[in-house]
Image (cartoon, rainbow, N blue to C red; front, side, top):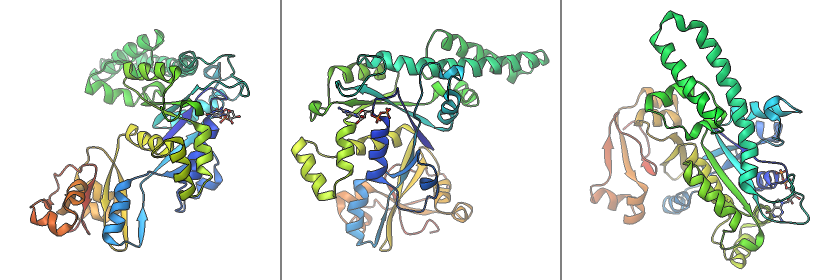
Length: 363
Ligand code: GDP
């Protein structure tokens, strides 16, 4: 599950990507990290792990991770396959969600490809290319469906109707993600593999002088836009993040304090990306390690156990579960147990974000 970083040239994508990978690089062996410089596997910051590490006196702390993909060079005309356009579109197709970086800072030293800073116009340029690429995909899909439609197959008729609906929406210049659909239609749409149906996080790259307020007139309009289309938006200053990522933890703290900030913007960005992907975390604890495991929101306990090991999914019967918040509140497993909040859950249990699945799932 990758997050693809897109945006016009010179908006700060690489600065942001490099800061993310430097500051949060996953230490585990992900060989492709070194092979493909455009993919960064990063730790998801999680304060819960710090608490658990201390409580259990654990030897090791393992974070959940998320992958970022730096998709540089999406320019006007990409959907026509101009230059390397097609290659970039295929990279975006690989991503499960899009991090759309938008320039919200003015600078005489950094040229803006379109002359002046105007985030809404910039977003539109990128969106237009993505919408055009999707129109092409849907048109091809429709052509294929038209060939088989005379078979009067109900499934094909439904698909065709949806394809027409989506194409009309795209033709009017709207991304597929803003189309109101039923749950059934949403499932069918997934198989259309449209770029503009992917969830979007706008990252407003603001100026250093906009800290610590984290706000400026440019970021404001992006936020308003994101609210209208059910997307997310956050502000960071890529330049500062890049500087922060070069510092030791203690120097970072001093620098952040000087800036009036609590934590690096990247932490918020990675967390928001994780949420955007519809991911949740469950935790395992022990002296050897405390660990955050990534699951899709809304899965049942056997599937969650399967994330640890496929044998666990097959052999799953029951698990001991408590919520992190209860453990945090009561301070010890014993106290949680006494309060009757350590539960024994079976196969039908929907795992929640922050669940601590004790020791083994094979209880
Ligand atoms: P990309 O083409 O979108 O990957 O953009 P880059 O990350 O290469 O950044 C383009 C230029 O903008 C570089 O010279 C950066 O140093 C500069 N830059 C990036 N972020 C900021 C920022 O937050 N403030 C300022 N003033 N400059 C920035």
